Length: 375
Image 1 (tube, rainbow, N blue to C red):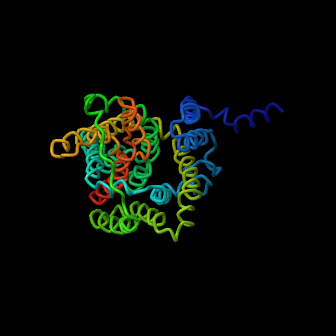
Image 2: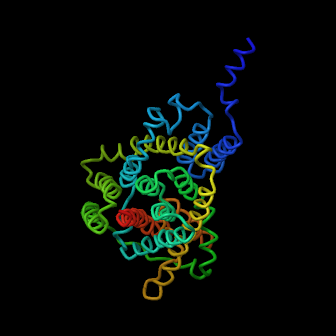
């Protein structure tokens, strides 16, 4: 009996447990707590946190249980990440959820979304100087776009082995937008700048809203063809939203499809962070560089807004430059909160949505440019 018990125990997770597993399971519990107790992106952090726990339950190799084992259920689900399927479907849902009229009402605000992408290329250069290869540096730099699906898509094409740490870093910083961005925004602006009230945007016609996703897709993808899988789905989702006759498809894209894919993406990305492949000095470097990338992107958006005010008659509130990162709509909400702290009657949300949406497009174009250069 004792021998049978010892044999049984040797097959349990308790016998295979290591300190690394404990650290990662603790990280998973932390993600779940942040999502539920602090309301930091719960739709992302809760499934990712649970996935981290799933991926760090010790199992025998060869049982077809681990996410990296051939033929495992998690392995098949993970193909949606490694093949770029989940990010593209999420982009379709984002397009179906988003009103692009804020961009059309004042197109000049798109420049703020472009300016914020400077963080991607600055961090790319920084990662290269620290000894990362071209593909790894490009994948790390894209974290600055604060766009989890884009970061996953590019990494799956250039550096698949880094998907776990890069995805966790990207989604962590997306969730911590209300913590990371305000100090940078306040540091780079004066009180008078934060009090600027912007003109009401013009009303955009239905025809313009229907033309934009088609025209925008053609222009963007002629500019950066490698961004086609992401931007094609983004603009398709928006066309479904605006066409009216496809409302049923738009509802599916922005509800059941994006919700299902978000669950699968969160679980599989979390499960990919197995202790033996995740707890490395390289992963720590990625987290540090990712934080720098996100901070630089925020700063670039705010600074460029201040530069634009030198030339614009109708001044813009520099706070909205921070929304140029593509954490939709959280960055725009942070701008609204920051503006109302200075003046409760100042409503910046709709203005901030323009650079926020432009940031989504800009990060996808940035990823396409980097991918095309790597090839």
